[in-house]
Image 1 (cartoon, rainbow, N blue to C red):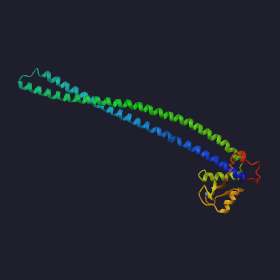
Image 2 (cartoon, helix red, strand yellow):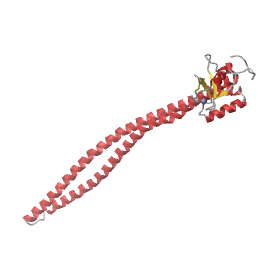
Image 3 (cartoon, rainbow, N blue to C red):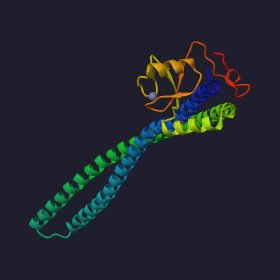
Image 4 (cartoon, rainbow, N blue to C red):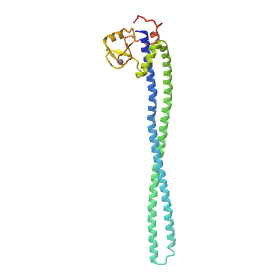
Amino acid sequence: MNEQLKILVGLQEIDSSILLVIDQVDALPDKLEQYKAPLKEANDFLEKAKTQAELLNKKKKDKDMQLDEFQDKIEKLKSRSADVKTNKEYEANLKEIESFEKNRDRIEDEILTMMEEIETFSNISKEEEVKVKEAEKAFKQEEEKQEEEKKKLFSEVEAIKAKRAEYVEKLDKKTYDRYMQLLKKLGGLAVVETRNEICLGCNTNIPPQLCSDIKKGDDVHTCFYCNRLLFYKDDTPANSPQEAAPASNDREETE
Ligand SMILES: [Zn+2]
């Protein structure tokens, strides 16, 4: 295979693996996002339970005040009963007391129900607080894991980039520029294999003559449809720079 083409094939492999690592880095925030949902859910529940408990406490305070008022009235009526002169007055007073007592008892019942509800909501709050803490912990752990993962991936990219530089050094500037142009234009895929007379970059048929030229591998050919640089893969893979690197830019007749 033409030495420049050989290097291009290797360079494409390197760039594809860099893109793969970048994809992995890009996917990390989405993964972290999955841990945000349960945290938000637990927080929302906690807020709701707290709000309900506050609301009930406020209502209960109003009822407490009402209860005090009724109690006051009952006391006053009771003390007045000593001063009544007639039976009729006495009975009327008694009726009034009974009526206030009925209301007082009703409010007391309401207050008891409220207290039970307040306790329920405060228990829910406690449970949700535990859930929030657990969700926070899981989120933090994932965040830390991702930081480690990112570090690992970045150092992987650095290593690949160093290898890439070795390849680039061995390419003609013109060929490299052309490669980079195609890489940017064609979604990160500039050098593709031809198989069964088809360009694997765009799945278009390649004319037989061009196909046999590609197989010879004497020159760098392009797909007439997608413009990608084409190569024919034979059985012996030769992608490491040592094997691919030309001693000079002289064309060799081997392979
Ligand atoms: Zn093509």
